Structures are given as C-alpha cells and as structure tokens.
Length: 288
Image (cartoon, rainbow, N blue to C red):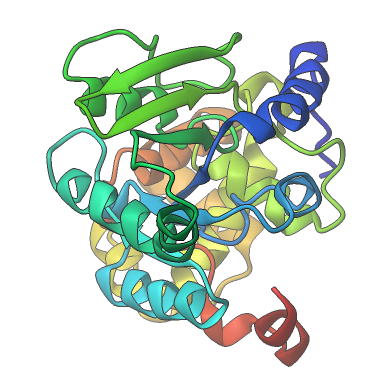
C-alpha cells in the first residue's frame, strides 16, 4: 500500500513556514507519542535547521508509558528539549513554558550580554496533521481560538495566539511530506488517523494492525477477540478472517477491518506505541 497525500495547502504552508521562521525564537514540534519518529516530518530538519526546538510528545495518554519514557531519552540524546503531555488536559502544559525557557537559555544569555531586555517567547507550533496542534493552542491560550477536529487537515491558515505574558504562538497547518519512502510509516500514520481513510485499503491497514498487536501486545488481542495462543501465530490475513468469523461478519472483511481499526484508534486494545526504539538501526540512532 503506497500512500501519497500532499494537498496544495500543504505545499503553501511549507513555503510560509520557511518565510516566517525568522520571526520566532523557537519551534514547538508536535509529534504523536504513539509514533514519535513516524509522525516527524523529515522536511522540517531542512526548514528549521539550527533554530531551537522543543519536541512535544502529545497524546501521551494514548501511548505505552514505558515506550514514551524511552523516546524522551532518545530525543534528549539527540540534543533536543522534550516533554510528553496530553494537550486536552493541563497535564504537561505547565512544563512547556519551562522547557521552552531551557531550550532558549543560551540565546537569552547572549541577549542579556548585549543589553536586550527579555520579552515574550515567540514560538512556531508545527507538526503533521492530527497530532493535536490546535488543541494545544486552545489549551495554552485558555479559550477556543484555534479550530480543532479529530481528522487531518482542519487548520488551513496561520494565526498568532497569545498565552499569558510570556508566550506568543504562531499556529501553522499540518504538513505531510510528499511521499512516504517506507510504506510502514504510511500505515502507522493511517492507523492513528493522520491520513484520510478514503485514501486507504482498510483490509491492508487492519492486517498491519493485527500483525503489530500480535507481536507486541498479544494478550490484548487475545482478550479483545477471544483468540487462543495458537491463533496469534496465524498470518495477518488469516487472523482477519478468523476475527470476522468470530464476530459473525462471515465474509464481510471490510466491515471486520473497519471494526478492528476503530478498536485500535479508540484505545479498546489499550495504550500502544507503534514506533519501537529497539527496531531502529544504529544509523538512525546516531544521526537523527
């Protein structure tokens, strides 16, 4: 399954981000804590370059806590400030300002040496669709200013938002990259809802999800769909057929696929993390 999705507004957003980067002190890079690497846009490294960055592992309440801790350590080892949070609550939001100050510590010291007085931090909030940027903006500002939606492509323009006296935020549309070189990245993004469902083959996606849970969270799959230990060793397509039969869907694999994807997205199989540090090759660990 090859997924390509690069609407016109995303190409425009990339240009605007590049142009407006000079107006901000720091970039808040939101990623989905369930896929901290796959939900990072590789184009951003070229765009942001050496601009200070705070990596925000959002939706941490949906991710595997042990994996989230491992990913925080990973990003810190890459030289980034990083926090894990849930933008729908105050959990982690209080740490954001402190972490931004820490990321800008050297710049603030240089400014002070030049006699420049401290002012509100100007930050650009950026990330791929559906990572919760607008939800975070609303939480920081304290009222519903940024438009939100549990689907990709809701935010289409750019806007400045003020958060208290110490922070000004530039919201931006979500930007995906033109083509996923690794098809598994596209499937991971699709499984969490970052890509519109009408671009997908739901049975392929359900099989991918079943194979992932069979490998990393087999007991959850077994409990949810009343599977035996032997069933979990079945290939993904056979597992999909078995679950379809157990749920009384007969040969309606489309319906069974939609049910499985819905269960995964709604957390009915528990918290999970699709990106696993143990699967990174040494090159990725040293050069990310």
